Length: 357
Image (cartoon, one colour):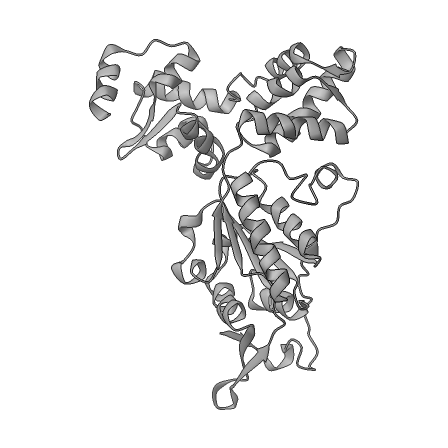
């Protein structure tokens, strides 16, 4: 329940001394990120099972004439959680307001956003697992009953108010679904995990982005970039821009397989999509800790990196690619990791893996 002071009652006819943080509305302008964002399901590449489910859900909501159930998308960063929220809003013909959990520090921040919503609108909260407890509790009645519970005044003059809100849809996105509290997670009617992209899907993303940016690219060039994009469309789009720089300056402007591979080699991104930090992590475990196991804090300290950077940026893809293994005792480089780095795996380490498996 939110508590507000007598001189700062939002929407109650009393002046507000402090400005409200306003949620942004997605606009498809000419900036790079917005120019390549899909606006409908046909142009949104990948996540086929999710798209088919959402199409049915959206059509059912339109026929009922009611807002969508609240949705939660989770998965590694860069897979299109924000983008698909924008597509949903476009398909439903409603506005979407986008904010992030760290921006909602004080009760008035989330209250101001909720009270400014119009019927049917979508509120998108990124990194929703980072919501503070007060903001989370304000959301409970808002999500369930579309009401805002507030207490005004102090001690004997305190009063409880229940303010109705227009019916809206909350879309939450998180990279750490396990850190969401059960009461918040259970209030989402639809929960979906976004998966890493295949090379074929990423090649389509690369070609689409190149077309929007008016770049000439061959099928082989698109596949070469896709192979080094770590299964993530955000990385694929970034690499398209970087490779296009090399193509324009050092080559004839056409991105083919040779141009893509040579450009990415210069950028020190190998055929698995590993960058300098990823390879340093694997080499550290092999050379300093005999292939592991070793704790994540030790790895972070040795690399002079933040633990969250290792866990959120490096590890997900290394684990998914089978180059790294997470055990109860710590992280271990897998046999595939040794082979990728061209390092022979010690016989004793091989036996340990055989025993572990």
